[in-house]
Image 1 (cartoon, rainbow, N blue to C red):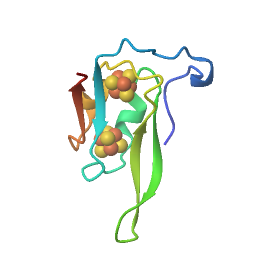
Image 2: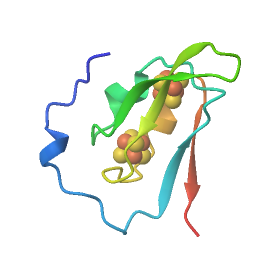
Image 3: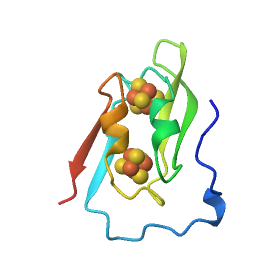
Length: 89
Ligand code: SF4
Ligand code: SF4
């Protein structure tokens, strides 16, 4: 799915260690719709093909934590409630 964010993540600054909440994708709930990919303001989510235990293929949202800022937009827009923001300890 096309990403609507225009900036080039290859040239983006890495987040570093200040993020204190981390989005976690539940691979069992993710339906691979790509909504989070389109809305992430840091363009750090991609869909990847994965194989499930039964051999079926599906698409899964994969977050690049080097660039994620922990804003929570992905959690808010996910129609499958597959992303949860988790406070870092
Ligand atoms: S928390 Fe924000 S920056 Fe991180 S993946 Fe979700 S939408 Fe993108
Ligand atoms: S919005 Fe939710 S269901 Fe859709 S790809 Fe992202 S995590 Fe998966």
